[in-house]
Image 1 (cartoon, rainbow, N blue to C red):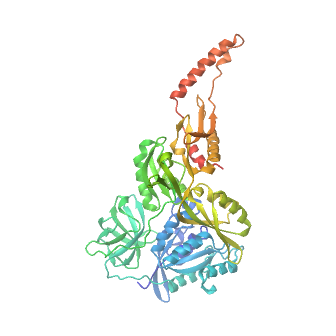
Image 2: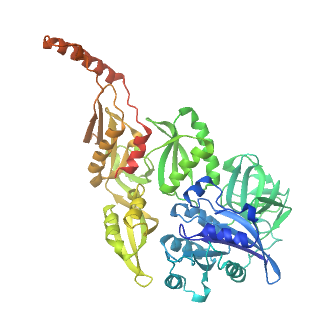
Image 3: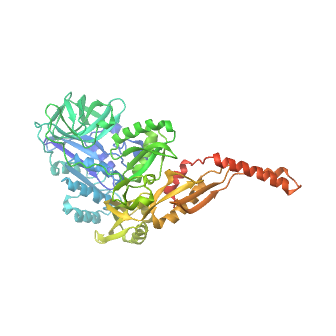
Length: 596
């Protein structure tokens, strides 16, 4: 056990984690030259196309140091704020972390939040300055930032380059010398933490675990503590580039277990595996449940695909534990699911994966957050969907979730960023210079509902991509919120209704109507598009009917002949309006996200 090292790689998005992992795998000969490709651990097509890591990836390496052979378990983690739950799970399976900082960009918001997560779990931090080979690199200044952040010495920082392979041997030596070996007793009752799981269509569900205490052997009879289910360990092993079976694994090791589990509800990330005949006293603690931030309805385009969509979401949830969903129905879209996501990128990725991996075409409604509604008697209900709001006469007040947001930027962009945040009902809490006055950290309290739609994109565009953003939930506050309904020919479309602040309702309603007028195709009758708060109409647009020129055959003659034909057409249109229904195209649901 003293020759095992478990570590993960944490950094802000695009600071070169996956490329550095490639070099480590290459240097330790874990991957042969013919199998080598860029970002070898990112095995999803989506990850390669977008150049981001979506899922944590674990792999085992062998390395000889000082005449001894060491086993290194590496977990490469995502850098985007929407996938921070993946990072928290990876950290739970490690004793140390490589903190990677880009020498051209310096410390950014996600670097700091991932670092705090690692420090909370008592991990040994090894700072690495990446991309030192670039001409635009500024290693001296960035090294000062790291020293200021971590309180380490300049000599502790390893300078490296994921592209050229510079500094890789130093990193491997530092991992062995600085990161402690895992603690645990191989003879104690088995205690293993499940930190991830994947679905394999041929073998069922494969759970990845880290053994804290005890030893597990093939064909052992094991139990999952949280679900109480019992299984035979058909195959156990370690994670190389592919699964590599072993006869037994003992404390300190990271591995996988296949036990023919077919039902995705039986495996919970954060659960503990133990033996049936000699169980551990209690489950491993300290694993928090995921808290979704953004909610949206996901509906199949064809109603009969509802059960297929449920199966697809369950399989996706195995692969991505931060997705939550529950069934709901809508008058406009039929049966579907209300899904909880960690952010907008997460929502986009899930939608894309449903299409690619499960061939499911879905409609997604406007994303919103959960509100607390208090009635006149003081009872509180949580509302995730505006259509679930009680009658206005019964509501005493509504509270909405607030976040504490931290934006790190260079001083020249402070003006536009402040304007953006204050325009989203934000309140400035503090601003301070970090790293010798070259960057500023602005802290705001903002309503979560204001940032779920397009805040992040706007922040990136006004700061030319330099501002980095990170946030955590900071309680609920009372707000003056109103439900804005969109009516088509007097019928409310529940999938387009939103909860919005009273001050923004008028402009938002007007913009919605204008946008829908462009998107809804013309019919044989006039379509009235209205925005309403309760019974009060605040905006209206009309999509004009498509008309045939019925008077074309009347050349000359009396006006009454034309009038007769027009009256006849008018009656037909009126009858059509009574029985005709308005089709809302898929584009209209997405247009709300891009109103600006």
